[in-house]
Length: 315
Image (cartoon, rainbow, N blue to C red; front, side, top):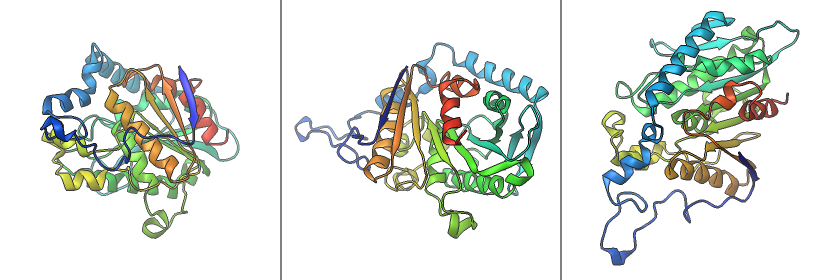
């Protein structure tokens, strides 16, 4: 694996908030940045096509998560909002110990349109074995709801978890938030929330954040097959992107795999560059993983991403 701590990152374009223009001499108007066709953008964001058997990964996640829930200590389907999908699962440490515990609040991916928290329970196993409380959030999906509504649910879920941290034995000064893929975007939206004004929480209600293989720029998705479910127009995609508002977080680590598409790499690099240019420290971790096996390093309580969570939580 390669790992680098960077505080002066340069994005892949002069200004990450604006698309790169195609050279006028080509006579071709790009759809986004230097992409000139829908097929190109579809390939760039068809992340399932980057592995030989995505179905095997999905089946493995489901089976391991079900097995873990059968043996885990915790609370399932804690309701944080009025609709049926607004729940999270709380997995408690294997052994009781005195004093409040560090916690991980994890948000799953699925391009805002697929999977549920129950697919990702396995992510909690390693850290719960090492004394963490781990919450895995569920939320409604597109096209039944909009991404804007999903963002609202993420913030409501975290506010509920923070408010009830004492019920789960959690130390509110040692909560780390993390998310994968679309969950990486969710993490960024949590970092940009007005926690004081909207929720009555502290300005920085978490110790650190770890977005993994995130999608932070939604504008290219308007032109892809994904938009059949996402229903984004250019205005919504621009307002929901998170490359222009600096986050509020004490410590931030951005991680992605070196076997993902160049666009997924660009997404993480541009987000980290925006954070760095705003004067906030950020660390970038590049794992020798694809988009789907990168979370093994988190699910394994001794893996690099799990160790990063421990460090961010001050363990």
